[in-house]
Image (cartoon, rainbow, N blue to C red; front, side):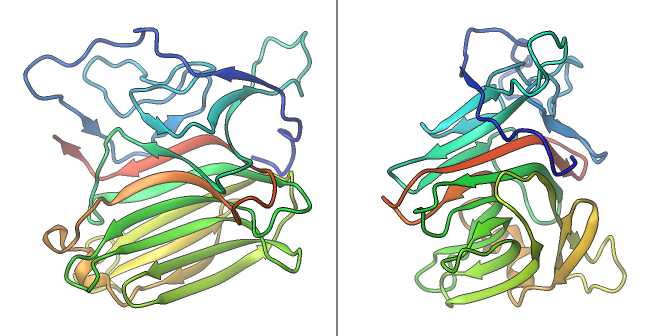
Length: 281
């Protein structure tokens, strides 16, 4: 998406769980087919589907679909008035707003858990807004797991998003962190502005797909508006690529954070895409 639009909060459309949408798959266990093609996960206009047993979208127009999202209390779908009331083309996006807690999220729950070997890409159009007093507001894509064998067995994660640092500078950052080891490897991916949309994309590449990598390596590729800005091979690749050596997750989510109690943080997300290797589970 071009760096425009969505600069007005608009009116909230709320969430809905009215029993609509496709029926549950037959059989005792859900059948979920993940596609290896660039798959639209949710554009909040009713388009988006990872479950293809009946060929219908699971996304809900103007609302957060409970079949594909696990939202926190600060999540809602907003309709932008930017196109005008006479326009037949509604434009909705997911808004995460935090005024007190300093943290709000929406988890991708279809599927709830994937692996580094089958995960390919997570992308979204992202916009950050914040009060001038808010300290370190941040809106980002998150990929998160834990490493039990490294005491105390806490998180390993990668973030890609827009942040305003304590000096007031707004920029795009790609970073991975190992909480157990205190590791933070961050890349400055270029300047940005508040109220400005950017398409952000995190790719996880493995040796099967790139001969320059060994079979025990993964590579993180950070894209901004379609351009590759940085790549990293994490030190913990051999652990991360082995699902027997990771704990919680990996999960994917959209998050806003900032210093608790310092002001309002608003993250806007649209046209979420999630790409996976073929799997039926």
